[in-house]
Image (cartoon, rainbow, N blue to C red; front, top):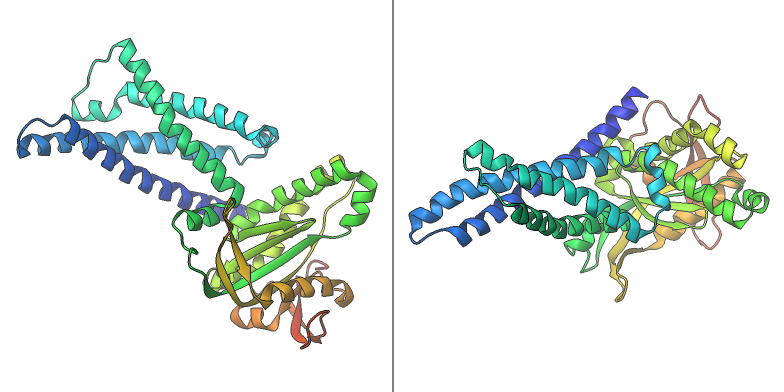
Amino acid sequence: MIATLSAVARERLRRFTRILRMAAGIGACSGVVYAVAIAGPGARSLVVSMLISIPIGVIDALLMASWIAGIEIFFLPRASMRWLDALPFVAVLILKTLTYGAIAGVILAGQPGERLLGVVTVYSARTGLVAVFLSLVPVAVVVMVFQAAGLVGYRTFIALLFGKYRRPYAERRFFLFADVVGSTAIAERLGALQAHRFLAAVFSSVAEPIELCRGEIYQYVGDEIVVTWVETEGVADARALRCFFAMRAALAADANRFVQRFGVEPELRAALHLGEVITGEVGLVRRAIVFHGDVMNTTGRLEQATREAGCFFIASAEALASLSPPPEVLVRDLGSLALRGRVEPIHAFCVERPNRST
């Protein structure tokens, strides 16, 4: 558990430091703009203004980003804060904007950068209120970015933002198809509304281990979740293989909560495959990144084959050939499997943990 928590913390710290680096750059740019606006005539005056304004902009931006990113990355993901997920998007946007705007306003009013450089300015109450109000605008933009990134996934959001897949191209990717065992019977017993809540709780529980394994959640299809990695990301530390076991461990840790709330302990079955896909953006009104290729259909057929094979986790020979299975798992050869809708059989393996019936 300690190793898992430290790994999660490391991943979050990486994201936190990336945001701080971006904030420092934005603060420096704002300092340059401010210096140009207030500089008097002559190059010397501009240089002096920049030497003062740039450090102030960086300090203020780093303090604001530390608070806002710290709350988003380290505080809000806690189980005690899941009540926010039940609020409408607009309510969350307003609540976060007011909270973060107040933080930004306090930082601006406190003038930490100016105090360090000895250039503190005495503002009137009116000027202070204007500064707080103006701080709400960029804060609202930041909050909307966080919320939008949460809807589509941070890596997908960055890819869309910078147009990484504007021109489609071929790449090799791992795909993990995982679905909830016995979901149809569970839905019949719970009813449609409770079944939805059950699946939502399952997907929430496995989100953190997927993030830990640096997987990208491509989509949810009914009771199924599709996770993907580019080959280099999935191979590192056998993340694409470890992810399934990390997801099951997370559900096992939440078993009592699921039993108390839904009367059932959720279980997963999954399939892992590797192959070439064409990746690109599609859509006009709503843009999305999609993957086209036989690897998608094959992974889905492999996941269906877990039932006949009596195995909770199947990996194709192509996937295992690229990975180095960790020592704590056992690999059992299933031979060539004939998959529905596919002419050629595919060589696959059952991947298990010796201490669990996986």
